[in-house]
Image 1 (cartoon, rainbow, N blue to C red):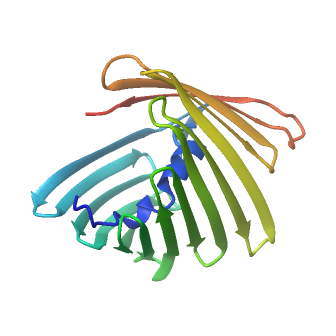
Image 2: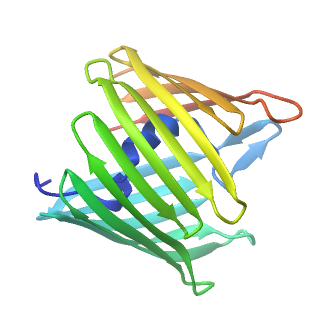
Length: 243
């Protein structure tokens, strides 16, 4: 990637999202379950430099979605386009066309993301965002589906131990609801990372991720909703193999 490339639209706010949401074993909208067990299988493959500045991404989240995407990175711009198959309420798949772009530099970037559902002939995504990036602090502002605005920041405490804190403040206009989520991560050992987060919506979550071998990672995550009537804790286990 060029030193002047701002990255992709999905890089806007990504560092904060990784601290606050990544690996917490959240189930997708469509999933299989047996009694109290929910499961899914997520596979993605990225082929870099199929042409100068052009990457290909193929992925599937069984049983909910599959996608093919092309990424073009160049000075001051990053563009993606592709098609995704998403499950509908009838158990079939609807094709969705996706396009996103970001312009700027590694210091500041703005971008947009558009999704069009071919079956319903309606826009499924209308998003925009901007990001300010420095060596230690990353701040971003996103507007999702013209209904939710999110402001997030990510601060690197110690790169050596992968220690970082992040916060996200979001407001949904349709229901006039505001929520704040704060989280942190720390690597106690080179292959062991601990993360935690707390939300004003009453959710408290934590996880431990352990590298079993060089490319295999086991994650155990737990979550409690203190505002629910039963306050039943949830526990998730996931494994990831990265090439």
